[in-house]
Image (cartoon, rainbow, N blue to C red; front, side):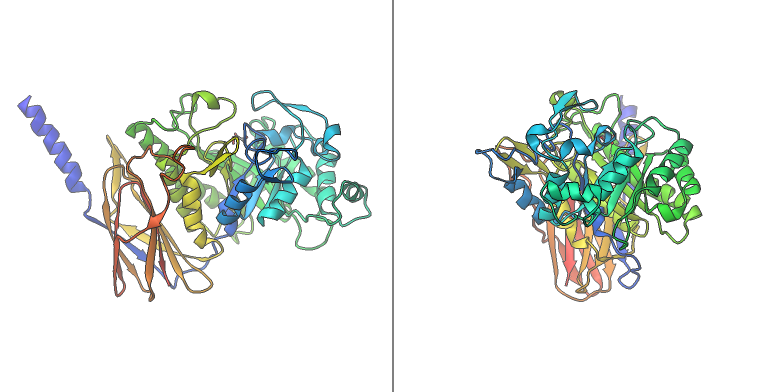
Length: 511
Ligand code: AHR
């Protein structure tokens, strides 16, 4: 027994000794080459659970919940504050079952359909194209429409483009005008199907690449301006062959973006709870979230082979944490804890650091579904820790990414495996202000950072932290987790020393 205690002590002290006391981070303030596209802060809204109905749309006759044309005003205000740059709709898997013509014209005459992917609920099509595009206008967000390739027709998708983008005098634009909207919306971003390897039709990449070419040929912008931005349904996680075939077989003059989906899931068969997760489950979730770095690097390398000038963008149009709760089996409703703040902070840092190729991303999903930024319950609404991270970070939108180097990494260990605990990214905006985002995912260890950064100005900071990883905002306690001023740093010349608490997210500004 004594021998065992001694050995255990040795192992423990070895792991303590193996961890550095401080981690060094250098920020290259002159090395910026690429803009962090604001669309990296994009969101995703699907006809699934209570994302659209109850989340956004409560009906034009609702007297309990304040709304504008049926869309909740509390949600609109919160999303304006967040500066949502782009919003993807109507799916997801729903997109390849959706027939857009069912969602236009008088609401009382719209046909119903069965939402086959999401619980067989009856969709009454009361929230359709006009509702969505007007909402985007209200938010100041670019719409990203996901077209139906799996169960639709080429004509159907090309008519949708004409309906929303043709100025007038064509059959579809005249129909739009008859339905009350004179000016076209000018929708730039179009998804050509969703998850074509799965719910979009279980296709092989070679087959889809041909189909993509056919659909993309008939999608025209009708204005001869900048043109449409067509996004091919991309790979699932590690399916590098999918990206390879698309980049090889689709001419690049008809391909503006290739998508990628990756969720942080413990195990698709047993996803684990949203709130009462163990430290082991936290480790596995973070492992899957941090996999984004490798996925983006390797998919980008394949794209580089066919497109060294990086004209085609990598669009991560679904990402986030996915858990299991008794009530979310088909509605995918889940709470959002400090674990989700860790996923958001580290993933956005990855996207910033790959700004040369990753030019849009869409968190799944915006309200009441998966890693939502907003949760609603009838007339009540709360903002999640993920909302706060995205708001703290939005200072990076359209700023120049500054390269960051990290040495003497702190690790979050789990038996023989370990994850880098510190994540960082930086940018310089048009006014010369520098922002640095830092995350410490370690569940116990507060950690010192020694940063070298050649920048003058006043330094201020904001932090998101809490006492427990499982902490979350609730309808009873909506402000349990909220950003606070951060004072845990000292700047002396080009050195900035920071103490990062466990599982915290910090944004520093030097201005
Ligand atoms: O976001 C939920 C679902 O996950 C989407 O509908 C689908 O595209 C993905 O599999």
